[in-house]
Length: 111
Length: 115
Image 1 (spheres, rainbow over the protein chains, first blue to last red):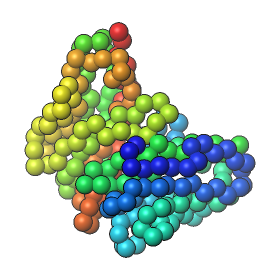
Image 2 (cartoon, each protein chain N blue to C red; image 1 turned 180 degrees about the vertical axis):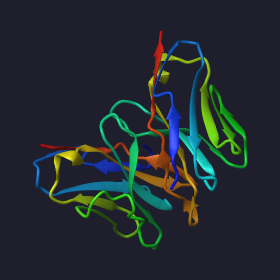
Image 3 (cartoon, chains in turn red, blue; image 1 turned 90 degrees about the horizontal axis):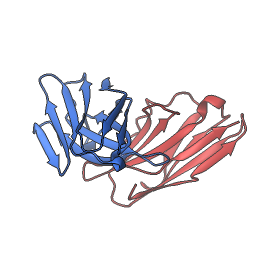
């Protein structure tokens, strides 16, 4: 989507390895979100950053998942010791003018 | 928390016919209801949204209606075209501080438009 880029577009990793997924939003956004979409499923909320407030981590499925946002802009989602059930498309979204826009996603495959 | 239900899960229509997708929500504090279109291999694209202070909004062939009392909202696509084929998601959100809160999504509707 316009205003949000994600990298890599595809990531294949082996079970047990750590991965980092990156989100580059446009400047001026007011909030940043991570969602996960498993094959044929809806979108599952993971974490949400707004301003300088503590992030809402209520959607993170386990302590293997973490995210940070540096300088109020770029965000990285880290998954440690990946499991096969982590395979999904990870989507970053931003809020701009009170509407939410999604990036193209990173497809993660854990072998 | 909020619970959003979406029906139907699949919908097939003939080109030129109308398509209607319905969603219900549970949290009366929700005040923002967007609809997203997702094509294969792409991220969801915002196509229309409605806020709780209005009952209907139209944008060319697409319209959304909201019934706050019944807690349901619907997407209407008229004069469907094959390029409307995609998965459509509804969502609901309550205010999140000074900006939009997280979105709660329905499970999606696979719309197929046959030429």
